[in-house]
Image (cartoon, rainbow, N blue to C red; front, side):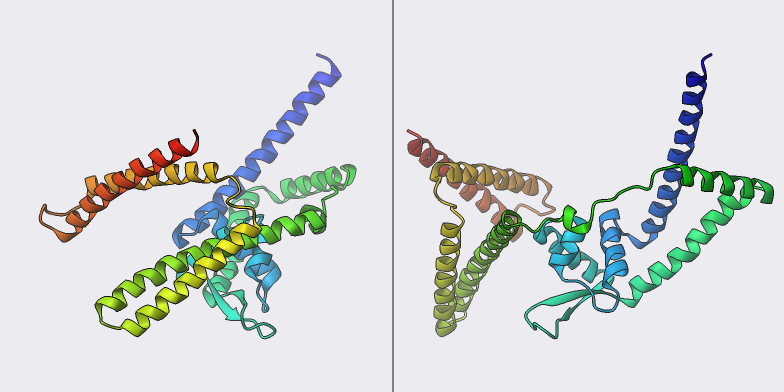
Length: 292
């Protein structure tokens, strides 16, 4: 057997041992999350707040850049962590319209316990080696570290460039999220206006309808800025697809409904299915006419 062949086998052993050690460490790490009902992504968010937030905390946008996630994704993630008591939003002194995300004492305790759990893990693994084996392993690893080239990691600015194109894309993404949020406000205000009318609160209903109309105008202006609407046929096609998804979800919900035939919930779902079927057919016809 050649020397190169023997060397290759030895390297293969080293790599397999390193992968096994990494897998064991990751397994212990995941086992620690299970009792706390945390996902890996949620724990990563808490870690970044622990490492970089400390007392001051972080904005949602800052946390998103650290995690490499979109603003709305991080916002939903923070909402869930806040409901579970892991983080809290505190108004920023410099800008009261914004909030910084901070860890709660519950999270601080989690990281304090993590240190002890890590010590226990190494005590029950590395601690099983004899003192002589420990010394030999440490010396070998020190020697390996010395002969290996120091890794060159990309800087934070390299991972998150802030050139003009990047800032423009980020700004447009923010505008799109704002437009989507305003669309939800329009729907909520229209629903509240109908409720107010039923309660004979006509002045409030008029105010809510007016606010919904203005929000709709703002949303339309934002969509115009973003160029949404230029390809009407494509948007209509997306609406048809979305309507199909809603229709299928209604059918699934209706099939699983724990209601008797005369129940109000079941009657409502059945009516919604009929209406959704009608919308679907109408949008489909309009889409066909538009593409002619």
